[in-house]
Amino acid sequence: MLDKHNIAVVDDHTLFRKGLISLINVFPNFEVILEASNGKDFIERLNPEQLPEIVLMDISMPEMDGYATCEWLKSHYPAIKVLALSTMDAETAIIKMIRSGAKGYIVKDADLSELKLAFSELLSIGFFYNELVSRKVINSISRILEDNDAVTALQKLSDNELNFLRLSCSEKTYQEIANEMFKSEKTIDGYRAELFKKLNVSSRVGMVMYAIKNGIVQL
Image 1 (cartoon, rainbow, N blue to C red):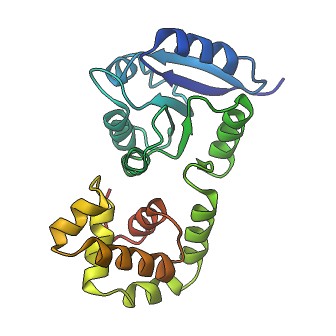
Image 2: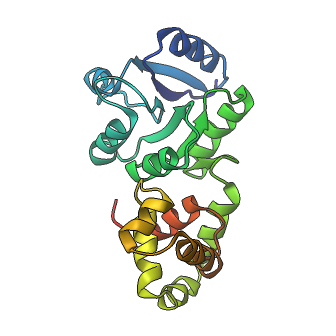
C-alpha cells in the first residue's frame, strides 16, 4: 500500500472546499487531513503532530488571508509547501504570494490533472508554476543561478535599473514606479526591456524571482 501524502485545504467557500476535498481524496497517493475556512481557522486547527506536506490555500479570505497565512507558515513551518489557489490571475497577486513564500500557484478553474501534477512537482522538485507564471521563466532563472552569469549580470545594471528592479518587486504598477522614479513611462519601458535582456527573463515575475534569489530584495 502506498503511503499517503497529507494535504490541507484552506478556503472560505464551503461548497467549493468540500467538493475539492472529495476530489483530492480520490487521488491514489493523497489525503486531506485538515480543512479550514481562513488562515486563523487553519492555524488553530493545525496539529504539530500531524502536519500537512502541502497546503492548498485560497488568497482572498476573511480574518486572515492567504498572504498573511503564507508568511506565518514560512516563519513557523517552512517545510510545508503552499500551493496558492485563487480566481485571481493578476500579476501583483502572483508576485505577492511568491514573496510571501508560496511554492506554486494555480487557478480555481484548472483541470484536476494539473492539480495532481502540481502536488507531484511540489513534492519532487519543490515548486510548481504553470503557464500563468511561466515555467520557462523559472528554468531560465535556475540556469542563471547555476553559473557565474548572475554576478556578471548584476554588475552590468545601472543604478536606475537596480532601483527599477527593486520597485518592480512591490505591488506598484509600472506607471506608479515611473512617478516614484520621476521618469517617463517610455523610460520605464526601456528599463524593463533592458532588464529582460540582461537577466535573461521574460516577465515581471521573472525579474522578481531573480531579485529574491540574488538578495536584491529581502522576503
